[in-house]
Image 1 (cartoon, rainbow, N blue to C red):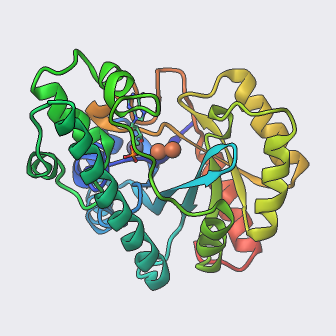
Image 2: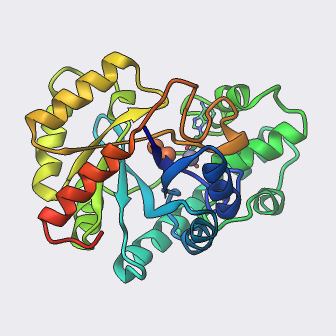
Length: 286
Ligand code: AMP
Ligand code: ZN
Ligand code: FE
Ligand code: FE
């Protein structure tokens, strides 16, 4: 069966492949379609679309928005974004400004800890407009402050790290509504990465469905087979669609391959077609 990948990151945010290179790799891997879903930016989508046409891979225009609940983060994917979503662009610009403030705060904390790092070095590492902790990690790694990115996050940048600062994000309801109002297909990204009390996820899904949530990301590199089954059951109970993708980040997560994740991930083209059917039934463009 032909495969697709509906969750990927490029150099527009914290991936390491340019949008064009990612689409070239998708063609090489035999993928039928790819959703580029960078964090807080749409700036990679036009390049990905051009490359997709050149290599014969369908691009689904997307993005990923981090949101916070009282019990932790939920990530929201928007798929089939329109070409020029003004309101979304404004909100993403706000989120990028908040990222910039946070990055400056993190760099200041690192400097106070005695590390030799500047914001200029971080910005020189990022080629896209959405800058985050992986870019700071890259500078620290290059300077030998840790052996690998896992260590950098454990020591400095992760939520228990010495230079950690939280990121100001949206509420999940607001993000879902924003995307749904544009006619995007809204999917709850990797829901099983959040290990909360039983029943909590159901409550969230029920609430977000009322705001326009359309789907659950069942297949994901970090989801076990049991996680996938739990997501399929969740989607069925709430009459939601199903999406799936690797969450590919290139060399920033070197063990995760485009399309196949850690090696076993398979998202069939039927998953994409089912989402498309749901859109057609709702009168949305495909
Ligand atoms: P930010 O958006 O700036 O908060 O950074 C989040 C990104 O950092 C995630 O998408 C991951 O790519 C990366 N990340 C978060 N935690 C870790 C970790 N423990 N090890 C490696 N990368 C991480
Ligand atoms: Zn990322
Ligand atoms: Fe995510
Ligand atoms: Fe992601």
